[in-house]
Image (tube, rainbow over all chains, first blue to last red; front, side):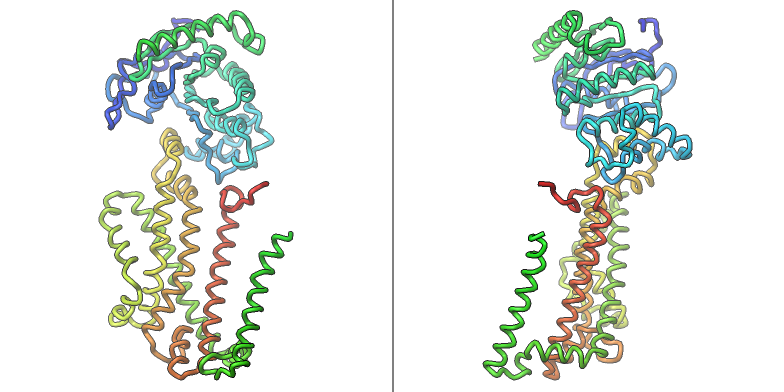
Amino acid sequence: MSTQDPAIVSLRGVGKTFENGTVAVNELNLDVRAGEFISLLGPSGCGKSTALRIIAGLNGASAGTVEWPNGTADTGFVFQEPTLMPWANVAANVRLPFTLSREDSAKSNAAVARALERVGLAEFADNYPRELSGGMKMRASIARALVTEPQLLLMDEPFAALDEITRFKLNNDLLTVWQELRRTVIFVTHSVFESVFLSQRIVVMTPRPGRVFREIVVDAPYPRDERFRTSAEYAGFCRQAADALGKAMAGGA
Amino acid sequence: MTDRIQRIGLPVFVLLAGILVWELIVRIFAIPPFVLPAPGLVLATLLKDGGLLWNSLLVTLLTTFEGFLLAMVGGIGLAVLFNQSRLVEYAFYPYAVVLQVTPVVAVAPLLLIYLPQPLAVLVCAWIVAFFPVLANTTLGLNSTDHNLIALFELYKATRWQLLWNLKLPSALPQILAGLRIAGGLSLIGAVVAEIAAGSAGAGSGLAYRIAESGYRLNIPRMFAALLLLSLAGVAIFFALSAISHLALRRWHESALKRER
């Protein structure tokens, strides 16, 4: 991945002011390149989720523009909560994007099976969400976002509510899937360690109103595994990111 | 297991004890049947007048069932309409409330002036039963998970898909709760209207039989008819509870047994 790769989406001076007057993001500039794994790192309430929702088109920007050089990319979204339909089993939940686009079942059956296989839920296709653990629900939610193999995958603190063991496991599995599919991922998190482990580039944001404070390139090679997680190189990047985050918060406060 | 025995056994025990005490009191104090008939006499009357009361029960139940169906269609339909259009909701919701808070006993005589009797009775059953369906369905439709709505928008769902694939299924527990209330209320509405109507004939419902027996001081028959009405109400409640349980048992907390 180099800086010469074309941008899939660019934010130019994006701002968002909510009806109650809160300025969530202000003057946000960001280029996301195709195939990149990028993290938005910042404290809770710094507007990083808002930025993600603006990219997804779920919120409109009050200022600035969102540019798609090659046309709007099809997008998958993973929320902080699993956001599954409790009345539908796992397979039906994962199939949702196809149900809504009225895709024929032969094609979607194969895609659903493949997505469930990827996240390790193949045996749980007929289970209902409430029968799954928190980590498995999140896997189902990721499978739903992946089922159409979208060009752009937006993830809004998807593992924040999980225990550390489960989160590490899901981090590993997410990287495996990303390396297989080579799609663009924008990952929102408030965890320094998670952002360093996962991404090629970390965008550190200031507290409200959210702006880009600094970009950190994590040029450690993939695949990254448990060895990377305990390496001095990883610790160095973490220190660098934590340092930037600390300064961003001090400057914004 | 012991819990199950207690849950069924205790109410049955209370029932039998109550009947026994009732029977004893009537015998010991030699109370005449036109003041308080003994349970045995009520049962005998139920068997003796069985044909008459059964036909009346069917009339009342048919009205109840029709009123319930109309309440279901009207309540859910109106709630969906309100959910689709704020303006329609603003325009009509207050009148739905007015319809609800006006006592049906007071409306029934008026309706009887304008409508043929069977229709007036049906309208009464509908008026009382439809509001809980409307209110509960509205609550359910408005409680849809916002993130799921966002997800549907992301995948460019149509209005119809949003309603049919998301809002209605997510409102199902509330809709079923509304229907359970409406079942009992439509029976009450039918009975109230029949009593207000008070006309005789072959097509008279059970409530009319109660009023008529009262005028004739046929107290045992009053009790027998009342017993039938209660049983009908209980049966309606259990039938709707069973339907609700079957529909929700795989996914909704209310229908799941808590593990300990």
